[in-house]
Length: 114
Image (cartoon, rainbow, N blue to C red; front, side):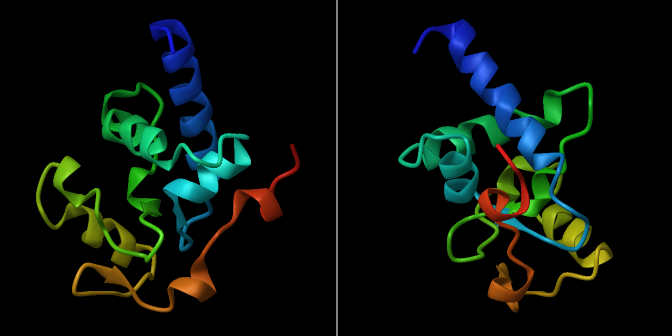
């Protein structure tokens, strides 16, 4: 993938993440699947690593791994910021994992039209 296509894909990821409603979460794989590259969850993760550098805010705290774990927390300013942001939105986190993950999971493929 050339650099320009790479940056374009990252921008698509950020567009999807900006649509996640407050109080809901999704995962890297769901975003990849929605964007038509189901096996590229890792690339979505790489995009999320750079989300904090975007001029327009990207609510990266709403993206977790497939098990509802806060695997991206080390990319935030403090080790607990991701959890704090989620909890401000009413999401319960226990031992770095979203409680009731299935109930608050937001699937872009079901919520958005292509």
